[in-house]
Amino acid sequence: MVKSLLIKNCGQLLTMRGNGLGIIKNGFVYCEDGKVVKVGKGRAPKADRTIDAEGKVVMPGLIDCHTHAVFAGSRANEFKLRADGKSYLDILKAGGGIHSTVNATRKASKAHLLTNTLKHLKDMRSYGITTVEIKSGYGLDLETEVKILEVARVAGKKQSINVLTTFLGAHTCPKGQKPRQYLKFVMNEVLPKVEADFVDIFCEKGAFTLRQSRKFLKKAKELGFKLKIHGEQINRLGACNMAAKLGAVSCDHCDRLSRGDIKKLAQTGTVAVLLPIVPLYTGEDKYADGRALIDAGVRVAISTDFNPGSAPSKNIFLAMSLACLEMGLTVEEALRGVTVNAALALDLSDRGVFAKGKRADIVIMDTTDYREIPCFVGENLVKKVFTGGEMHPK
Ligand code: NIG
Ligand code: FE
Image 1: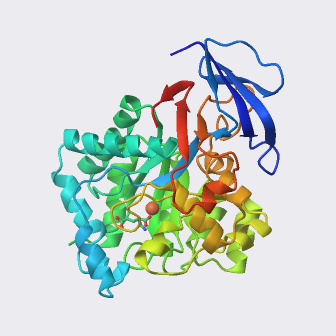
Image 2 (image 1 turned 30 degrees about the horizontal axis):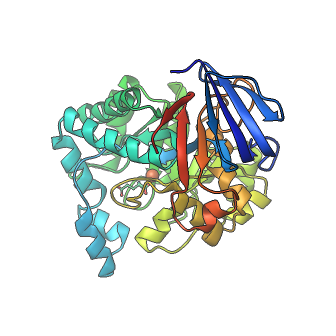
Image 3 (image 1 turned 90 degrees about the vertical axis):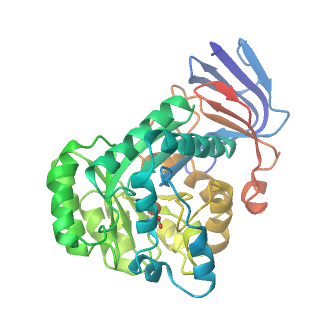
């Protein structure tokens, strides 16, 4: 890695400072040892490597704060089933959906999962993603859940993209078991043994009830874990409200929040992670009201939710476009949703913004106008990506 890096001639340097994009026109960003040292315009320090951004948009590396990227098998059969009118929950109830991925992931070797995951991480980086959160949840037993989390960590070390992990052993109840019994097992036998940055649960009909979810998250909190929740995706069970009260770092999906829920998120400072590819793909067609959330003062992040069943897409550009088209976000809010607010959703303060001491995770976009980023629906506008000051081919 070069010691110092200068990216000059940045037509629009999006620093993400303040409440908007903090744009510096014709600016530069100078980094040393993988960290940002100086951001500004005019005379720049000399560096070991200088990159000319040719007047393009330069911004902090994108952060995908909600994915399920470690899995085996394929759910291509469900694509057709849904086109024929079967719903996401119908398929889950019939033993498909998450269960189908669980079967394949339990059988898969660590080496196989690692190969798959490394490929996904490489694809993500080509979309400008420099930090990603990965959840377990396709094991639903101690051995496989631990295997998934380990694969996620190892993949993050082998591929230059930062990986954070979330334990989602409470993704759904394994076939043939009772949810209460299974949750007891996860709380007593699995939770104390897992290594993860966050703990999450899927609170939904066909997965876990509000009461079960509360009990589970309380236990996770007692054990010192930071909390997340999959809530209000298909039915409103009060999951996000409950998780916010417990101090969750983020509530994810949020497609069906009441006014009271929105107020609660604003009060507690819990980040709402919106996942617009999910309603698009599952045909639920009920998108989170991003506008209402932001107007109420909630911090909103945008993510792909990359997974084999409800959002088989790593295209964070598509997520941004949909957030603007279907959730009422402005272009500026969508860009903050995949940088500074996505960092908040992961409780990270060292990235997502250009300022002294932040990580030198940088994307050069192939456009001179940031508004084109979500405007070209789902188009990958990345030109160059840097993680910790290291340059990667697109
Ligand atoms: O975030 N909602 C629950 N979990 C994932 C989907 C998992 C799957 O279908 O494999 C989600 O949408
Ligand atoms: Fe998810």
